[in-house]
Length: 450
Image (cartoon, rainbow, N blue to C red; front, top):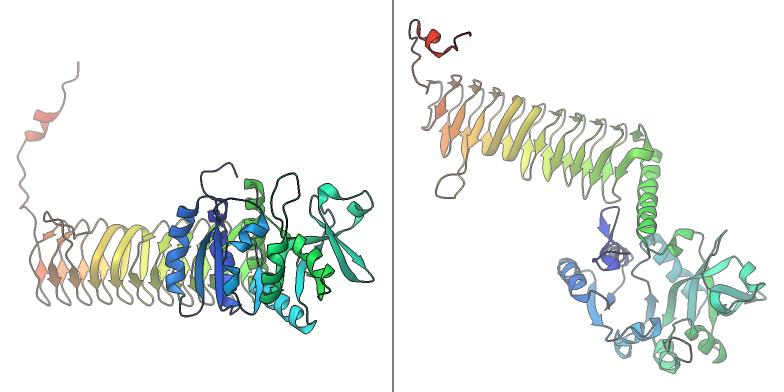
């Protein structure tokens, strides 16, 4: 990968490869997952351990260390195989395109055919350096590695994906018998197939129709290709569900996000995480959305950046708005250009047209926030305080609220005011220096012409 990051931590469509695989194991309802760590194990642990804690009620995830990288069979042996029970699926940490449906299909086929050992295979137009599946009368005879294959064997299009399913008692019996009689002195998992066949066990290659399960990632180019395929698959799914993508080739929606039917997504949009967008929304160009809930009929205008926020139905956001975490925009509200909000409850039908910062604030309904308004919530004591504004308040341009401060309903804040005290309901608040005009003084400050 030519990167200091361990390979399995490289992201595919926003999610590290190893978490993508573990998530699919979770959704396939596996009882447990055992992750064998090698290169960069400490970094990999820091990613997997929080994930394991968050899903421990659904799947148990255990970490095992491969002391020395002595081949794939040695890696499997490092996973404490003596304590395994039932059917065991062996996956590669750098094959990120395998899906939950794939895993369920593999297990189903394995059990229906009453197999002891199986390898998943695919047919590729260009098999490259994959090991070839050699069959006799439709049955798996052997797997021939690329470097050992004859010219006739290299013509075979069916290849091994490196994904195995094996009964635990068979694994325990034959894995220790694998030898390292090869140039690299390593223990190779494909030898399990030969040993099981020689032992008269039921062995087969399960041919998958999804060729992407064979897509391994060993270079940055292959990583980019995998990401492109995930985005493409997601866009295809959304198009089939009635979402309008102006240009799917330049639309990037992670597979954990959802978009409602009838919504329009313009080019160069990134939609990440667990974002849920309702029907009949419009997401204009160059918008970034991460982990947001966007209700029906919302318009997010060009260049806006939204994260961990809720936008209720019929609201308008942007252009060039910034919504930071824990912000809620009320129904039919308007957040205009160059407005930034953080930890704000912004009421229904309220408006903040432009050039405003609101943070740590509760703002009521039908409020008008004038241009250049700021909530000054961070104090000299290094603590943050809250601003509360009632319903139907008019805030004039260039006003500052020095928190903590509470503004009642039906209040008017005069333009240019710095509000440091609470304002009761129905009051007009003016907090600015009185203007003085100095007669003739302007000439004193003008430069004399030479």
